Length: 103
Image 1 (cartoon, rainbow, N blue to C red):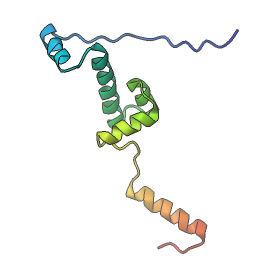
Image 2 (image 1 turned 60 degrees about the vertical axis):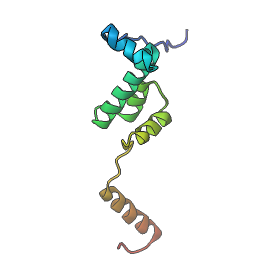
Image 3 (image 1 turned 90 degrees about the vertical axis):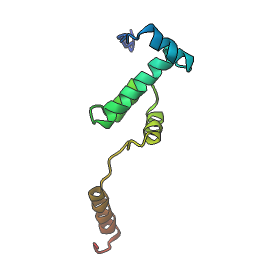
Image 4 (image 1 turned 45 degrees about the horizontal axis):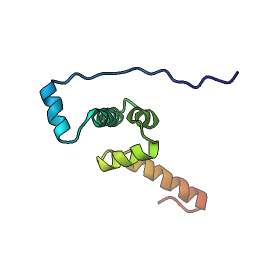
């Protein structure tokens, strides 16, 4: 018998006053769109705060990792941290591997 890859799920609900929901629907935010945006916004926030890894955040957002990285970029959230110190270390490594003296 093959491995069971079925993942159980949990339903998370949000209660909104009917008047607010009707206002949101009037601007095109129906239930599926509200759900999609809520997942995406939560994933971005938790990733930006360092509480979720990139892949897990993409999974929460229900998008591919590449699409999540693109979404982060559109919001001005860096997908990867690469400091000036990281760059300096990498440049020293490249120079060493090329046989050039360090600057």
